[in-house]
Image (cartoon, rainbow, N blue to C red; front, side, top):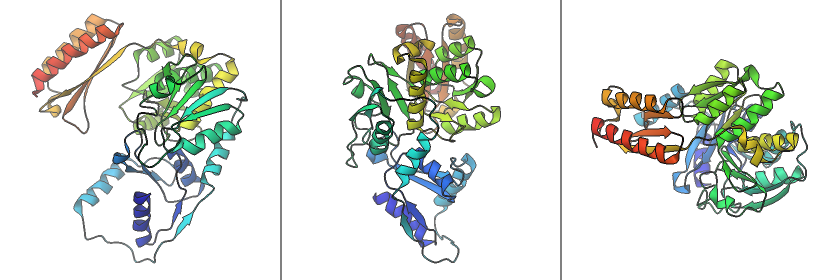
Length: 389
């Protein structure tokens, strides 16, 4: 709240009015920004991180995220520091928008093709932005709802709960479907009736197959990132669904969705974009779409998840002295080529530098967890030897 008020004070000082909607999912801000014809949408959130990592997300007037180029310009101006030249203007005014959650939920409920009444669900709100909106949404739709981690105190957001800790809810389920959100509710992870989590890859595979069968998957294409599991790619190939791959980040997924005229895309982490409805990840909308497949097919998630076989995936973060030297590290790429030949079509290797830390990330998928771990450790040694510690 302190950060929100400080942000608003800055806007007011240059004559910009603000509408304060209180605690609400990030996707709701994207929707309301567009609905209100506002110039900008602002979210103060820790996302999937601890409260100490609270930061700021911006949305343009169309409800979409700002471009990399515009964010770079803003950051460059901040680094430059004063003097700040602002237009002559009066003082802006703060307007409470007390019905923001109502407007958001009305929009979510406006396009539901199947009745969800009677489905048993348990909700993990991550002690975050979904704590009020998610239980209300599913209760109003007639589901039987139980909640955990829906009591935020400003400090307990994502604390051992939420989308980065699906095991917290999984251990408490009693045959219900688990709906797990992260702190700002743009990520969603499901848990099936047997207590097994479904990440974004599995969720997208289930929804993609359903949309494809209904003739509603635009261009029979799904957009994913380089982290998406090999099992997803194979499942989509069997369904004659094209897979477009991007760099990690939902903004890159969105760009590719627009380029390829796709209406479904997302990340393994649980960011899923339904471009027919909104241009950002929306955990509540994703949960609705998944539950619609359950209702439409009459099949439990334990069966629906079998659309794909998840290859065991192992990730190693290798601390190096020179991550920028990865492209020219011939020993690394020779090791990758050798590994790919050894795996044949039964696995995958991805090596990429971190964008913010002195790390190189080594990801391996193979037929077994043991194989993936052994290969990842071997490649990590090669990376370390080539780029230094």
